[in-house]
Amino acid sequence: MAEATSDILVADNHPLCREGLTTLFARNFGLSNIFEASDFPAVLSRIATRPSIGFVTIDLGLPGLHKSDGLRDLRVRYPDVRVVVVAAPRDRDVVLEALGAGVHGYIPKDVSVQEMAEALRNVIAGRMYVPDFVSDLTARKDAATESGSPANDAALTSRQFEVLNLLAAGRSNKEIARLLSIAEGTVKVHIAAAFRMLGVHNRVSAAAAMQARAFNDDPFDTYLPGILEERPGQPVLRRSFDTMPQISYRR
Image 1 (tube, rainbow, N blue to C red):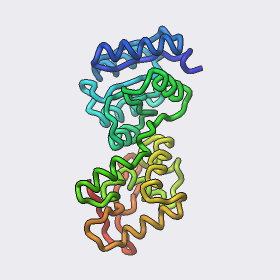
Image 2 (cartoon, rainbow, N blue to C red):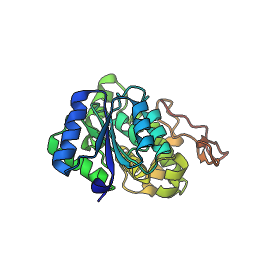
Image 3 (cartoon, rainbow, N blue to C red):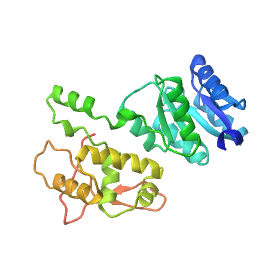
């Protein structure tokens, strides 16, 4: 099992949080090969000097991390290391941004010890872990209604637009993951969340819904970005076609 063969690195700038996670790994997984880091440079140094580290928990507030940029850097440098964010924010966009950077899970710090252990066990076993509130759209809809904006105006993130755009172009989950440099499991998370936003249940319906949005003349609607173009070794870029209007989306 992974928990018996890989060392663990707990990265958090709060000593109590590090101690809590270290104790959890020891009590619930019987592990003693656990290391700690209090900033992002120390994370990189630890992994570089100890190749046996195969699992990392990391807080988004870690000094030097720079959030998604640091997470993406960590995943690119050490693609075989499983990384799970253990952080305080319970914000759907924060979670999706972290998953978009390639991490294998996001666990809120305020969950129970049992929930934390189960979530870590899932990630260690090779599965993705996404908190339940990511699929709960109630708070977002309520906030949009109070601000006077349409509920779906802020619903889809730019990453979800990119994923749906490629999906509508007939790309498989594996191809989308490669083009966007994210994990295939992350692609599935984005697709599932976007389907809920659009109120559809399959790829054909999602493509139709996005096409309808693309040709909507309402300037306040949220639009799909132009068809994505692949360039080897380069980020995915946007491209427009004569058969489609110029499309933009809000940030």
